[in-house]
Length: 369
Figure 1: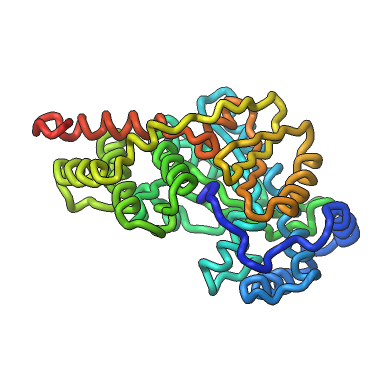
Figure 2: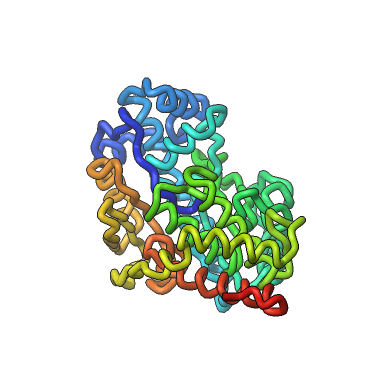
């Protein structure tokens, strides 16, 4: 997901109950769909969108959101087993409440129970060929979980978004026969595939969202930032992956010159270069909560168990409603830093790739500065 975006909780959004109450309720309804039913979850989501939610509505949403953790754990285990011994990076994240509310606000017609990225797994590959090979094999996997989308529906490598976003998403519906997991049937999980080049671009977009008032990811804010990042995506696609981005009609020289002109005005690359990459240490524990404070300081808290981390997440979201907080999991501390570079203000790969990409595309025209 966006994977991690900075959002602010709208007025009136809050968590009017404690984490222990939430867990207690969850344990009493484990034979029913989390939140009671899909229609009840949808009603709660509509109430939040209309700023008329009551305590029960928030309770329903939290139970439904928390239930995705089991789905997430199932899929990350499947993916880690299939990527063992490879150079594929696997990470996961559990969408926080404030981001769910923000998405409901941005998409007025969306029904909450159909939101498909509350649970998210990300795989990062060296190149497009290995991405396509792994994904093709995964589509043949023998399990009960159902892929909800046609193969090309969310293929943003073949059909890049106007923002410049490139990657591929698949959405699966959770389905098991066990009594313990039966009530979770129908919950959705998003699997996100991207290359290291695409990940570098997406990381820079997130970092820009953190440090400026602009959100190129959603085409919000100063259009120059949005346009610059879309052009950067075009440069990366052509220079490293023999693909086209959102400006397929432009020549290589046009793309490079246009990007350099905007960069000269915004000082974008120098701004990113000047960031102090967070030096915060991440422990060997597999469950980490990343907290990006308004002061731009990153705080990392790690936990031995997923249950302990999830309980802490609910408490932190209640205590810090306007703060960007995310629960992540990866095999090693290095993988956490790589998969969630945006939280560590690390745009170094993007800077290197864009500068080298511009030089590569413009070398014959004496355009490079």
